[in-house]
Amino acid sequence: MPFKANADRRHHIPKQRQRVTNWAEYDASLRARGSLTVWFTAEAIDGWRAEARTGRGGQAKYSDLAIATALTLRAVFRLALRQTEGLIGSVLQLLGLDLAVPDHSTLSRRAETLAVPQPKAGREPVHLLVDSTGLRLCGPGEWLIEKHGTKRRRAWKMLHLATDTDTGQIVASVLAGREADDGSQVGPLLERVDGSVASFTGDGAYDRDDVYAEVAARYPDAAMVVPPRASAVPSEAARSAPTQRDSHLRCIVERGRMGWQRASGYNWRALVEADVSRWKRVIGDGLRSQTDRRQATEVAIAAKVLNHMLELGRPEYVRIA
Image (cartoon, rainbow, N blue to C red; front, side, top):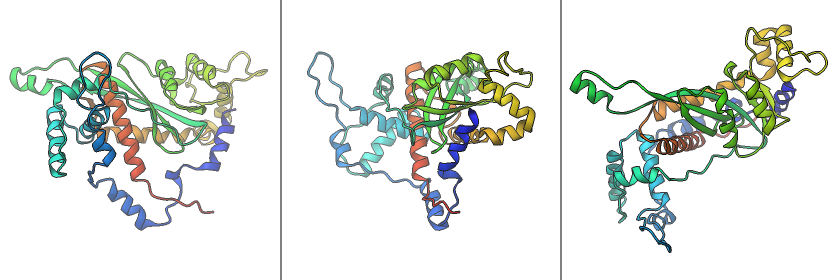
């Protein structure tokens, strides 16, 4: 039942919710989030150039590591491709490294096929929190306004995120068109989760039969923590074989919606909302790439950047009685 997963979760409280015992280290970890330290390891220098191809076709000059490094700096500093090229050149010059700088056209072309490793959950099975937000498509809007007093029709895409309750890190992300609703992206999100799922928590937009069926087909023992709609009614088999949704409805009748949220663990969904907020504040609310595959690479790199920042800024916690 959905409440069993919540009880199990109390035995490993996420690090964010435990009490800080060393405020000096915590303060230092917060300052570390704003520090800028750039270095190249010997392995990175050796792996900057692409390995020679043995088959037919053109020879790549830069390795995936070099392209990923440049695109990561682009995401962190919200740069255009030409400005990214200039930043990489400046960093290499300051470090005294004799390495070639990928030009902006190479970065754009290689972003189309760059493979970004999928993030991993802190432990298995993972308690999954999902949410979505809109990202606008950046383009010539400002220039058109200045030049012609008009702009192109506003467009955006929907970013769907899945967060690990234990770590607060993004473990899966999907970019879809604005016409795609939240429920339709549950399958693609689950496909990107590395490992088994113990619970699935989302807002009322996921209160759909196909969402319950999608999760149950992949993880039959997973708890579903989704608030039923205000007009929801129990199923026909609610007395003899109640579903998880029937259990939620019964709990809401007995305790009210606020009581159900506390009992079911629905309030943990604030962690994925924090990830959405962090995305907007650090990465921005727009997509700089123009094609679907480049946008997918941009989103994957942004998720990796945010996870790494969260890990660097995480202090050491000790649970106390």
